[in-house]
Length: 199
Image (cartoon, rainbow, N blue to C red):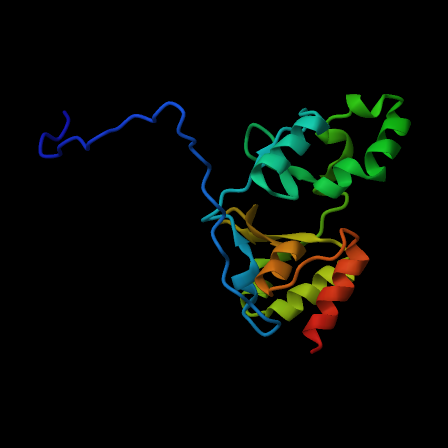
């Protein structure tokens, strides 16, 4: 039985001809090399990651990334298990051409599963217990050593399953440090960021 002590809230209608925009991304706190690493981590408990099916076309994945202003998508199945990661760079660079040639199909026929970074084959992650006491400089050094622009962070549940906690993104760290990426090339980006940490 509904609680009759609660009154319905007032409502309104969206007006025709008046734009309705999606919310702007919240401004993240500024950080420097000595800031706690968790300040630079996108926490999935407060920001649910955007996922895509492994059967989705590359065009669809790129549209989602463009619409949501993100550079990667997590690939998950119907049971919400992580299958891998697809990045903007990986969906447009040499990886799709190589995959198409290997599979004997046209690049336009590829799906996300054909080019994603598979969780067991290629994906290295950080553990929350190591991140909790680390600094942003440690994270940048780790990304540099790995040669990747992203790294997932995991914890374990009571049954010892991996549980995604968040992600570190090099471009996000750059923005939080007040740097403007000068190049999409990972080597250039690392060079710019690491040199800034040394000052």
